[in-house]
Image (tube, rainbow, N blue to C red; front, side, top):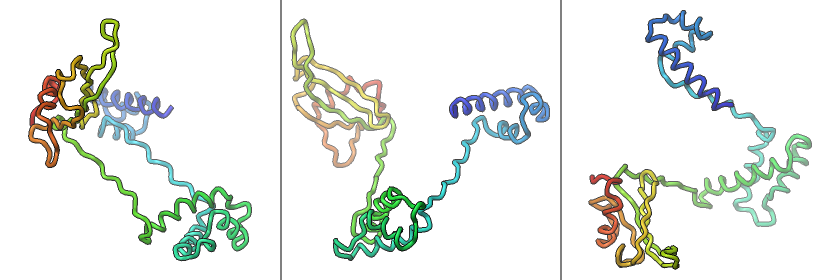
Length: 224
């Protein structure tokens, strides 16, 4: 339903812009399309409707007790194992000390503790933080190639052939070629080829593999 509404609004904006080019005034556009002046102004400013703002995040019944639970979990950093707070003990202490019956469920306490326990350990340097380093590739500059064996039926017989696979690093598109003879592709059983003519620092290149890859990558990759 959301996709349909989005598409219809794009069509509406396109119609408003066409009519505006044809000479209709803003007031005439409002009457023709049955819309307000804000919609007309937005359509004339951009052909693409703005994404609606996400609804505000709803609060949780656990919010009033987050600091209390965090304090217990921080105490656990140096506490003996038997003195620490598993989810059941956290739930029981909330019931006994803060009268949370019917307000905070066991599942809410368990899920919050599972997340915050690790975050607190990371903040205190007890665990390494999870990091993510995105890879970046320039269009038409790099590719990865590999060779393997594949069994095909050739003239009624099963024949082991060499499979050449090339994957473009930027788009992720792949090209595959099969050679009936191992020597027709390359003498190396496993190579990683970068299609970048200059080659990135530290990359290993197999001349035979590059020669074999040239007919495949021709037309797909442009030299830098």
